[in-house]
Image 1 (cartoon, rainbow, N blue to C red):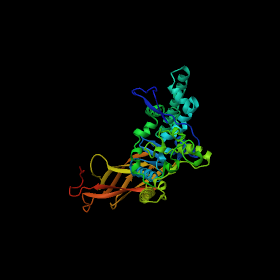
Image 2: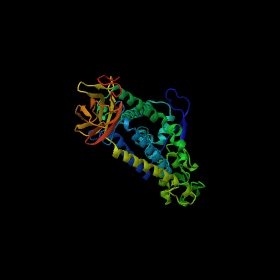
Image 3: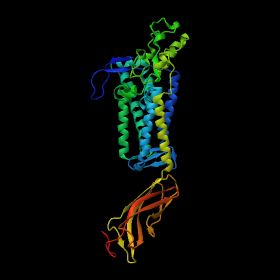
Length: 456
């Protein structure tokens, strides 16, 4: 469990730390978690290096205000997709929490993943298991203790930098970052991220889950009697006695307590500190299997504990699933109608119109086109005008590579006519092989102001 031991404090911290020394454990849930951790590490470390359509699989390029995701390029004009993604992730959290409880905390949270994958194995390798670590921390400082602590903290620092680089690879090109060619700002953020992880690994650990993580605070509002939780079978287990093993009761071995990374006793009932990592289940199974009895600690629900059948389909899960489906459909419809380029048209600075020597009224605009199509070949664009009969359109040919942007002058001319009003609405059609955009604007004429003079 936890132990009140005076340990070296980080700068600015005083007092006695309630340190938790979880004992190593193996079992079916720990093996499942290891495979999950491996898959998550694969995504974190491999995704920035994999390319699709010539771009990283996942990259958030903040200076360029571009997001590269699965071969697509998103810019600030695609903010609706970010909003839909955030809503989808939020309702996904609600949905899976309502069914499986804190499955995120026990199987996918970076805090849990990195502690179980890197930090605890390093501690086990250098300082030994739970009992040896407690004795080492309680013992006076010696050369051996100092060497072990220095080795452990150095490896923690190396892991922190490694993870800082991996996280930053989601925001800066991985090849430049890992070869030392990225900018100073990128490596400054690597240092900040690494420092935060180092403080967490060396000191904060489970305190983050208990004191800082907001999920533990509002998870009770997302769960009900049907939610899957880790619970202790008190009906079979109580009263606790060392000789109850053959009867299938709790022998009070406390193994479920000493393996808990949060320092709690699951036999005391549901607690907000529990992250549902299932280490206590593996611990109890390893003990009760010796007597031929099922585990006393298991995944269950309040409904099952009270003899009722657990329901997965219920109003809140149906509502969450429906909202998630609606968000997916909305995102799919928007993606299907999404045009992979941006265009804008603005009137050129200066006069509103000019009457040329040949009697044509001329309006000049600035047309900006940005190609967001993730294709290696340049894309040609054509420009037409709608809503102004007999208009003559003068524009430079536009051919843009992926992510290239260009602003060109656009001249629209029509013969002078008394029929035309002062302001004529029109639309500029910008077309490419992959789609088109209609840009509304206006055409100014010299109506009721005389001809042969420039407008103002």
